[in-house]
Amino acid sequence: MSGRADPVYKIPISVLVVIHTPQLEVLILERKNAPGFWQSVTGSLDREDEPLFDAAAREVAEETGIDAGAPGHRLVDWQQVNRYEIYKRWVSRYAPGVTHNTEHVLGLTIPAPVVPALTEHLAYAWLPWRDAAEKCFSWSNVEAIRALPGRLG
Image (cartoon, rainbow, N blue to C red):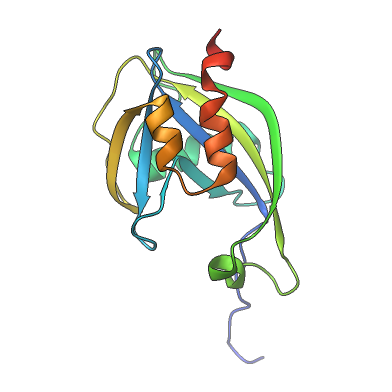
């Protein structure tokens, strides 16, 4: 027995949570490990059988301090799934040979903008949905935010 721990790899299944108000203001976050990269809350499942709602609520709490289950908050699975090639700069976080991620998109409606407790990010902004979409680096995040008005229709 070597005493070395096996590497812990990220599971290539994730959630993307668009946090927004009924007035279509969207919370976006600037990545600490990639300044200039703005996004919604994202994160991989902790285990393959973790329910999407649990993963989404956990990631929202970890990255913003927002309680997705608080009164007046509504977490909804948008039933949208994206599959994409993992960015080269982050592929080493996954097991050898893993090149693609499956992302599940959810929305979290909260009554009004709040100041998030940032842990994994440098900065935050609450922006009108069009401006938030323009600022995001990920095509899937851009598409999710652009679909927001139709989701609330």
